[in-house]
Image 1 (tube, rainbow, N blue to C red):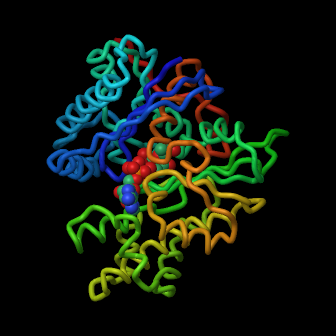
Image 2: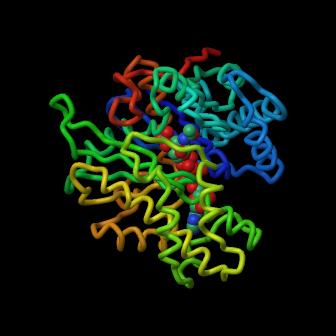
Length: 374
Ligand SMILES: Nc1ncnc2c1ncn2[C@@H]1O[C@H](COP(=O)(O)OP(=O)(O)OP(=O)(O)O)[C@@H](O)[C@H]1O
Ligand SMILES: CC(=O)N[C@H]1[C@@H]2OC[C@@H](O2)[C@@H](O)[C@@H]1O[C@H](C)C(=O)O
């Protein structure tokens, strides 16, 4: 199948769209990708949507601006697909399927609730292509964490890659997640172990926005000039999430109050604050190693965090093994999640499992996603 995957991540920076050729088992081609950044008014609308989602008790509730935000992002996703296809001289009718993640506005697996806004039916009819959406609902309903979903894709990609095992594939977005491949036998098979690891760029992004009005620490430049406050890093790492064994998942804002209470950056230099928050990300990722049967011997890093050399250097120092970028092994760094949702859509269309006991804690391998026909 030729599939377009669409991801709008926790950073709320825009829509990643990517083409992939896959049957949901093998990956034949990681195709071109595109990012359409959200403009300021859409970001503000999504921020408000996240705030309005706090009181939601059912997946279908759309209080406040949620319905408006849902329509807006759905239409922007249709534009993103068109913008991806036009330069490739492809029509929507050349596409077999679309995988539409939508925007997570609330994630509370403890309450069996996870909400991604985005109207699958509206996107399918706008483009005339079948759409798979609502990828997390079935897993959470069955008692899983509902995240991460990308491990089955990481495992498929890693199958075509040599090198030492165990191999860790790390995604550093607003929140970070990791898939460890080749590390444990479960029911006689090598099962990927996966979990969210903690805040990715979200805390650093928020700090940079407050201090500089810019949305992130470009190329890790500020952090590179700063000094890490190790005792502050250790204080943040006391959060019980880091003691919890995988599988586990996070809401984007899960750490805000905890970090605010332990890390007072008000009088701290910009560079030192950025360095300390970057170190929090690196240390929280490294903390997952204690929960693994065998430490990974190589780490492949994707997501926006792979563009931050200061973070990569801190990671390598804390992990003590090779850290390479996804781009360095021929995968997309920026659009790996978009490729993943194309792959997951193909699996969903075939009824193949998306989640597993070792990835989300769901009691048995489970398919997911809802198919919307045009
Ligand atoms: N040049 C750069 N230098 C440093 N950091 C960068 C750079 N480019 C992007 N980033 C970081 O990457 C983030 C975006 O990452 P990404 O697009 O992977 O996140 P996401 O997909 O929204 O999040 P998630 O994976 O949690 O859903 C930005 O917010 C920023 O922190
Ligand atoms: C609830 C939700 O949207 N979680 C996202 C978020 O962003 C990163 C991390 O937290 C992750 O595990 C998950 O997304 C990825 C794509 C996943 O499910 O694999």
